[in-house]
Image (cartoon, rainbow, N blue to C red):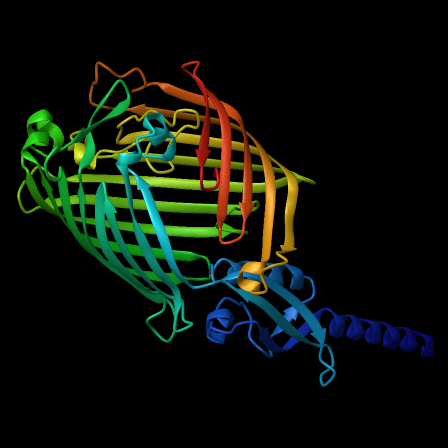
Length: 462
């Protein structure tokens, strides 16, 4: 009996010891390097507070998740987490968060081309069609992530705008608000699409298009990586008589149109790095409506768009990424000045950069096999002592890509060979990634038309 009691006692002692060792208490959190950013901005990205207990089984995953949250605020070039023993408390740890803040105030010289993308502009190489000015951006006002953006652009196409973003307007830090207003006037605009390429028109005297806009965008953050945006915008567009005579479908045959637009967007972001992700996933749901118009009852356009990105590490230096994007609209009767589709922004099949397909309805799939030639590396520039600029990171990746897309229910265009057909392109590329979210991407691709070319981009491929 005594032996049985001894065995039971020993078992209970071992079980109790195991229970004591399967968790850790985060007794304190110290932040180093936040000379501007308020500690509350960093604390709100953590899933625990000082005094909380964290399971040892999930400790590393919890710290990784929180570090990604802090890094994806885009306030810091570097974020490092480490745990140190707390000598004043058994089974306690102190979390040390070491950050390197970015430079937050940027007077950025601005040079823009009149075309849809850099590759389209390069076909003409017309430097007279460049616009120039500056973007004055304050990214972290008051150390509270407030952002002020003032834009003044002259030259070929001109713009003035001001935007102010308040990410947290309540004590719970869930609600945010963005406000913006501006004025644009363009000497040259996209007039129509022929043979799947944009035809531009330039007004010899004066400007072809003038636009005024103002919007409010409240948004709500729920959880740590989910956001809901509601955007309400007023628009006033005025077009020259020349453009209306050349394309009567440009704007419902009216040269001055005022209208409202509204969008509801939900973003579910679980990427490890939102600027150049290698692991995780991203889901975006976008519901947008144009109309009503104060001048034309025909403006009633609605579409729903779904974007899903997936990233994973296969093995060693080998990575995979895929994107699926689809959009479905309620009508094909869209005035040309509101037309987009494949070939605009990031919705295009790589190797078709010179073409557009003006389709309300499309489905797009992008795939990337990525090999890390040079894994993310930290270096110090010897002549720059300021850590915001002197401490840099860079990486180099080789990509093999294959993209496909299909459009349907388009207005018939007898000059188009791409509408309502399967588009596909493949090729290889090199991505150079460095600090301040800079990506330089060079790709060589071949499309389904048998055409090939070299293409340059300044954002991540997926």
